Length: 145
Ligand SMILES: [Zn+2]
Image 1 (cartoon, rainbow, N blue to C red):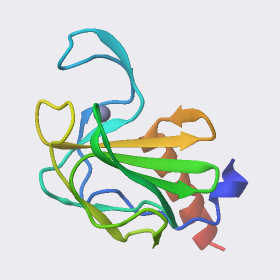
Image 2: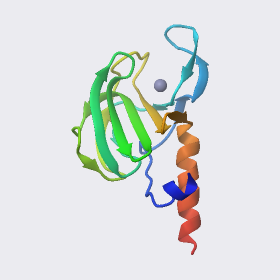
Image 3: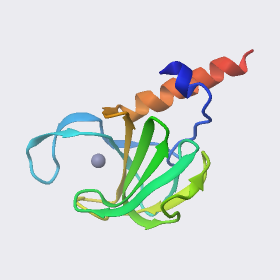
Image 4: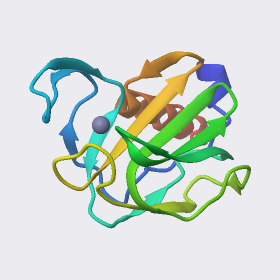
């Protein structure tokens, strides 16, 4: 996997990252039940959301749980951005890392405005923060040479 992601330029999905709900099993804030959270929730309220990698917009859709959500296709990696207020891209648009793709909001099942951010590698959801960190590390490492 490192050889695949080493060529990518990576950006953060928001100007600053504050995790309000982590990746993995958690008690759902609305249902009170244990559930698997396939991404991280980041503090955001009508903030600009950025593409983390170069890619193509796979879908812009309205989801019951994730509200207005954008999926970006980066080859074997897909990134998903949920609870958006306003998408700024359309399906099949090409996006570059760091490009504004949406304004965050509170659509779908939420208790407060935030950005839900998921990273999927093939059929597996990864911890998005570990994923970003791994790419940063690889990129920084490469810049030394
Ligand atoms: Zn979430």
